[in-house]
Image (tube, rainbow, N blue to C red; front, side, top):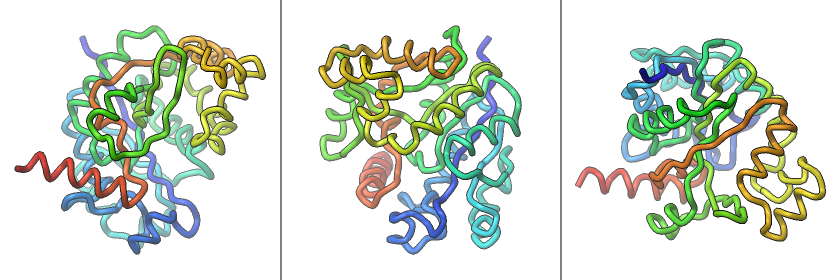
Length: 263
């Protein structure tokens, strides 16, 4: 029988807003309109339509932003999600959400994942349910993303056995998986610079990565030891899973894709 997941959606905002939210004149970037609906509304709808998810929490934005923007209350009004305040950064907010829900397995995603669908969620949850790990990450092969959307610019993780993009989909499959967010805190400043992230595993690992000799499996094994829990991955073959909306270019691409669906 398929497992049922609780969900944590991260929607924190930097003090003063992000460059993206300021450019659009919004109090929070997750409220960016994407083909007639906000990114956050699309994420909540995707989770609600999933067969695998049974509600959860929205972590963020800060209380003053949440109270001042009626859209947040409207989005959650008829959903199985509640709101909690974020913490000082994404990993601390993730841990707060995980501890608030305190049910496993648990799905973790981002409020700007505007192309998320119930099908993507169900496929990810089904795949991670077969793993004997504490944390699982979803990765999209970069060639799949490049073939579908050659115009998009994404952060690419380059290993000796393949190139991958993140999906903003994580599964915390056991209480031991809570060790991950504490470790992620040290990685947050380097999340857009993969070679710097690798250095947390030691100079040998960094050299292997820079020389193109580090496999994905070796990287996950090293990170597992550093985090103190078992880390695994699943591959997602839907290129939409790699597209989040944190820039005008990303918003325009997401709109193009969604409007294409309506033709």
